[in-house]
Image (cartoon, rainbow, N blue to C red):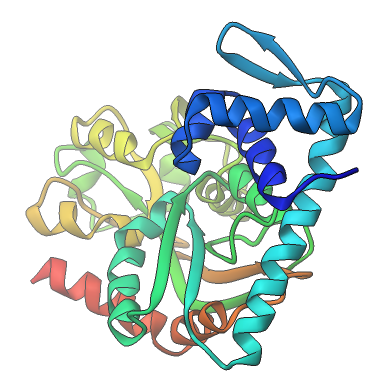
Length: 307
């Protein structure tokens, strides 16, 4: 097949975004140019790769198979480009990083410091759920990820760089807020507002429950820690969250973190890459930056907010 890498990139973007228009915006091309490239690929392949329903494009069965090979070829080209940078010992190019939502409270500030030291690196940051980050790693869309619990769906290299405490959080108006020390069994009848079952925070919460053989009264489940914080501030219940996302609210007194038996539950922050990924000089430099200074930077951020 006489297909160019440019055509493969266009095809991959249309497959990712399910839209010629959105792909054209991402690639800085016109929609007719994108449509022409897709038709050229389909002619070379000899199969229809997309089902077209109005403006929405969805992969056919043939398209599902072809996109796997297209992404492998694009990943190989990207690795070749990074290898040439490494050969020249350059710390430039693109650095694609993904993070879970709790990391947004410190990672942008860390990236700012890193960028001052490496101004030639073009940094692109993506926010995703655990499942979305798994897919990013599988599809070679990112170089590194910052998250709590490392993925299990894909072989990875995961290195811990900082402690990650999880705590009980409540409104100062809650009836338990007056207690100096809360036994774990006192939480049996408390209304809990929790993250979704696939989140790392929910996994940590379940670990705490298992340790104390508790059956919680879960009254609400939310996919956003920010939404949970607002519900807890409104005294709709208590929650179990990463301590690193609570500094602002604890500083202004809208939330409190009481002393609870068995808490904080200590986990760790990890910097993660796919096991098969050959890191560029920029990605290697950022990983070393995080491993060396990440924990101190998180601690400084917490202190600055409290001050």
